Length: 131
Image (cartoon, rainbow, N blue to C red):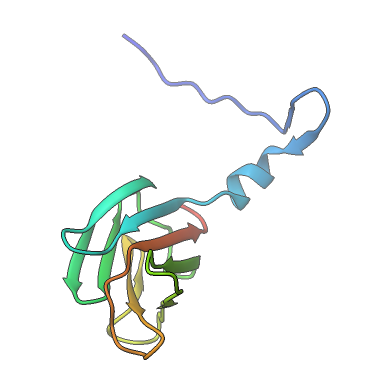
């Protein structure tokens, strides 16, 4: 029978640089996603993402494997196209259509004409404390 142990370390050192472990645990992304948001959507790669739902044109919902401790965490987003121009990404936690939840978040992407648009690259990062 295996038992779990807790290893408590104050600092990590690679031989040249020492970093406090709190910097790593508090400053690292707790979830991230690289999504192909066109056609049948596909997760290219991710961390702490159980699924992504295609809600409608330009609207996606990311669901986390492990929840965040509250909805007060920070997100960073971007999107791009393979058509030679950049789309804009909007994440708005105060809008009923794009809220941030403890178990995931919704994001909308739209093109330069402000129309909802399925884009080739939807990139999301979430920073905060896990539950």
